[in-house]
Amino acid sequence: MKRQTTIKRQTYVTEVLCGDGLITKERILCSAGFFAKDLNDPSTIYVVTAGHCYRENLTNYFFYFPWGPNRTTVLIGRMAKYSIKNYDYGLVYFRGITPKPIKAIPIVRNTDSNICKELIIHDTTQVSNHGVHLCKSGHESHATCGYVKGFNGIYINEVAFATDLIITDTPAEGGDSGGPAYFYENLCSVSLNGIITAGTKGILTILPLEIILRDANIEPIIIS
Image (cartoon, rainbow, N blue to C red; front, side):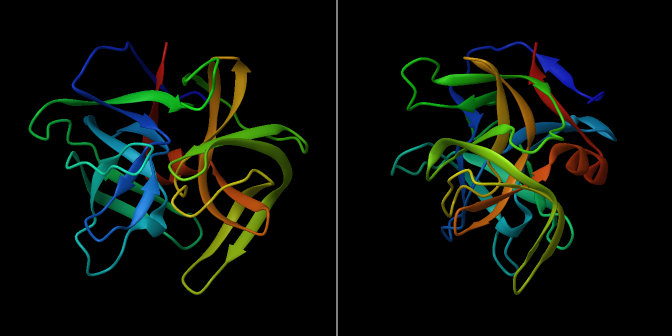
């Protein structure tokens, strides 16, 4: 991956991590995948999640929902752009003030771990081999790992015909959609590969990062 931006971590009132929940007032729950800049307007920051999190005729304003049962009133922003057919991704404006400052942190939440509760997104890498160990983080099933089973997968349901997917056996649940897919570089840092789009019967589909970046014209934010 050539296009990426690095940032240094600072202390803010609320820090939103990759894998945290995003929920609407109508209780549509998805997970934050990664943070990105608009290449046409670098001052605009998005939270990238799954496109099917968007609902026609609803507000589509997403609020911060940390791991656990307690929702918050911290507004992340409204979904600005979404795609379902072919590529399933959505871009949520990151407001940054609600009214207190909040910060988008390019770190994967891994709270259940006894070693590294936060995983720094240090790089972006395209997965190209079967059997690669691939993990994900999401609000409902938290951080889980599995293996790549195939490429160029297709997922079809009543509203979507999604293509070019990575197929894994990584465990996931409803509400994890949009969460980051990654592999470990070391115990506490990871390389971002894409986002979760769908899952059924032990199969999880991942939309590759390079497709999202090209189609949405965005640049991922990582930590140096």
